[in-house]
Amino acid sequence: MSITKEAELIGMQEASEAVAGTLKEMTNHAKPGMSTKQLDDFGAKILAGLGARSAPQLAYGFPGCTCISVNNEFCHGIPSDNIILKEGDLINIDVSAELNGFWSDNGGSFVLGEDIHQHQQLIEASKQILHKAIYKIKGGIRISDIGHLIETEAKKNGYKVIKNLTGHGIGKSLHEAPSEIANYRDKYNLARFKKNSVVAIETFISTTSTYAETGDDGWTMTGNKGGFMAQHEHTIVVTDGKPIILTAKNGIWN
Image: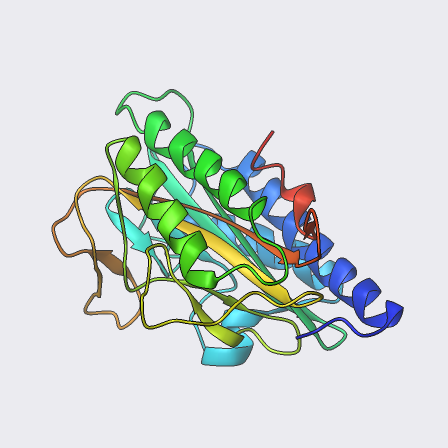
């Protein structure tokens, strides 16, 4: 969407604060021995208490309130009583929701407890790349140039990017134009970021895979060549200068 009046900016801020706060609280609440379903239920209560509705449930009938992916799961992991969190797990939580007609999206990967499997370097690379990419975005910048930046920075750090997972426009629905904000230079995408537009920018930084494949459950995605992936995501408003980070309260850069 494009922000045309103050009421729209306020609406987006409220929806974004709801998903950002929920992501932060879920990240802090996660403990070894807890199931991903218990963690999802915790997040669902927070969103419901704010009057927000789960975006993946609302838009796609997703069998959970939030997406929680563990270790080799890249994204869209279904919360389950059978998946028990363990010390050192690489966890990704993606929280998106609708509130009063406005939609916002954010996500983050983190290590649960001690980094016994050495995932933290991947996570830090993802965070830093997202920060660098977002602060290069302003009205008139080519979307493909931001993709090039993300892939170049990933390669510098010894990683790859997932080419079939992208950021996207957001606001009045979960996915809007621009429909694909890729993590690589898509030479066929000539579109530019527009001032006052709302977009969800996300990194998909991988150890070995370049594509994500959907599993037998119809939702959970893993890498075509295995390995691990870190994702971090903010919803922002594009300006002529520094973007407005609507989901800053999630604390993924803290």
